[in-house]
Length: 95
Image (cartoon, rainbow, N blue to C red; front, side, top):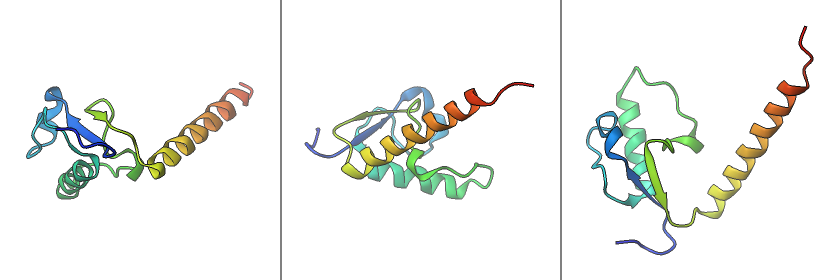
């Protein structure tokens, strides 16, 4: 059941083995899913640090619902920073 105003995430079946204990194909509040993924990663000493604004990999999860205003601001800022990095790489003359 979808809850209006709550951002939700669903783990795709193809990536279920990477997230033991998280049920694939089941919609959960994105905040809860984020907490579960962070808990799994904290137990795995081999995993690389995850930027907090990208905990749920968009390739591994589907999303529905409206992102919170804070999330929208973070996404906007991330896109701006990504654009700046691309431009700075493009403007550096090759030797």
